[in-house]
Image (cartoon, rainbow, N blue to C red; front, side, top):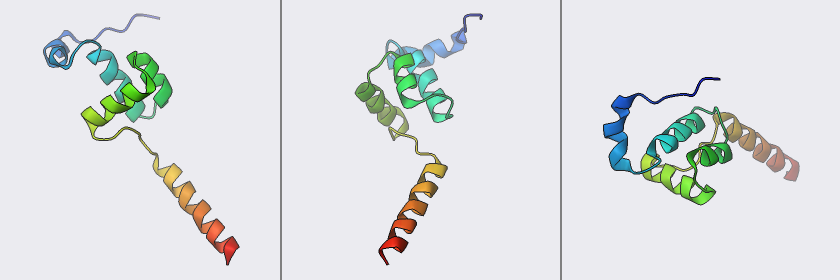
Amino acid sequence: MPTPTINPNFAPVLEPLGNGAGDFFLAAGLYHAHKISFGAAAALAGLGYEEFHYRLKEHFGHGFVVADETVEDDLRLVEALVDRRS
């Protein structure tokens, strides 16, 4: 498998963001695209769970991505539990 390379034109944008910015943003992009899990993204970025979560919030305004399907499943579960109580 060939080694992926980053477009050198990204260097001026990534440089002020610190060491490892390329790895972080690539991992974050794959996580936000639902291609890899949160844990896998944190590991690929070379960060711990808390630090990856913090940097996601810092750069994207939120730390976790919740899929619409998950929310819909939760709403159905709540509805079923409420119906059972009645």
